[in-house]
Length: 403
Image: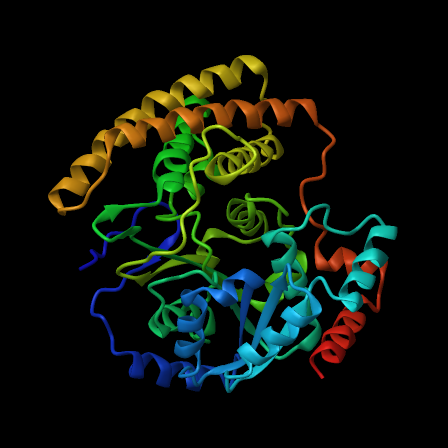
């Protein structure tokens, strides 16, 4: 059972009593009259052929408070899009699928490209960004939540707890991050969060001294979770990365726009498991190596905007400081795993730390070599300023595809 300890500067909402899902959903039904709720599901077509998403759909069939479900579909041919429409037709809620590879949305992407506003790369960030645009265009939801489509341990309790802090009109939160323990099948998981993000933030705090942003980031129990919720108005002015730095970039944007008393994190699951990325030791452009590089870049960009100076000497110091702290964390996590009867392999953990140290240096080299790089997709406020009727265009395109 979770404790009630509040650490850091972000409010933590624990799961102390395991409230019955019927009680939570009854309250959410009441909240939905004031704050209608939209769920966003960014998905590759390949997810439709795996058991996780079929189970998620079965759980969502039982959710009574959602006004709308928006599915962002990537890497789908026309026939695969038709299959996706049939797949999601089992849901009783209003469902809209964004066929991102379809001619209508590709035409809109080209319109943005001509104005130098299009996302530069395909990926989860681009998918989520277009879904955000449609949510703003449809106007169906006052609160919006997002979660991944590969969650093997999904239950509708997760969604109820994720929505509750931003849907409750008596709460004052604009943004909520989900967190959970990463273990499954007797193994301790979550290597990137445990062995990259946490020791990297600790190393930066040691090097840079007192810093509100680093204290904020260090307050999150699982900063890389793909589950978060927010007031729909938040979508207008955030700029998200198009690469693997999406989750870190999202937290950084929320920090830029809102006071910390408007931000919270909530315990949404006792156990969480999803598909796992390869470590990719031999190819830094794939797997966890690519993810670690993009996450490190996102952290460095934000520190630079906070006035911190990064140079080759400081990067070498950061790598050494990170490496020592990460090795210490290996001991801590090993002991935590053993007392809980879980398995963790020290050799594999040290391999991961060595790879992540390389990724930090690689991210630093990229950051210093490309000082003028624009890593973020423009905010929707900027899009509508440049192309005033663009939200209407995306709404019409999605409706035509779904008709």
